[in-house]
Image 1: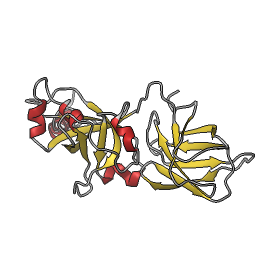
Image 2: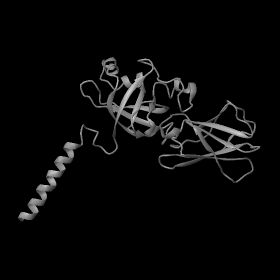
Image 3: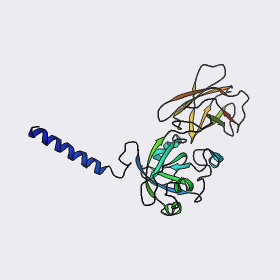
Image 4: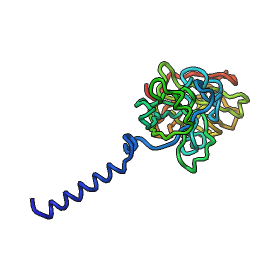
Length: 259
């Protein structure tokens, strides 16, 4: 090996060492994990929010949402289009945190002033599960902690995508809430097709996981096409909403993104 080659190798080794040193705690330097902060709300061993800014209502109090809900800052809430997405969250303090990550479903927006940074506000149950055995209360007593997080596929075993017809819907204003999306979990666009039509009409994002279309009179049965926000995966549920639909009813498809 000549001298110039030796110098190059030494320099490369130096930068590798520096890069590893700057990567921070284990996991924080992994490109799939990102830094954030976390707090908790509700009762210490509770399910978190009652309802929330995504519009899921009392669904957050029962499985599969129960005790797995989370509110996020605007960076992940994305004006409601981030609703339904799933994340793994892990705390880093080895003196009190386990190696276990908790999986949370975004159902609410956190009011925390994070100046563009990512923040999670978890249910008391989810927050406590990040602690080593017997230290859940101690971890919750810390209030705000540093965490790492990554997006993870949503999984709803035995569930297919469902569409809840919101109260107030008519043949001229139809509003739908999307539930139980496997995979990406989030919705980037939504289209509807009326009976005896080949035309897909674009729906408007209202708030949270709620979408609507104005027109009419709208003729069912309706087919619904969803496109995820994260990976732009599309799924179409044919005639999922019957011609004699009613407000406040929920209609379940035969499909989901991971099936």
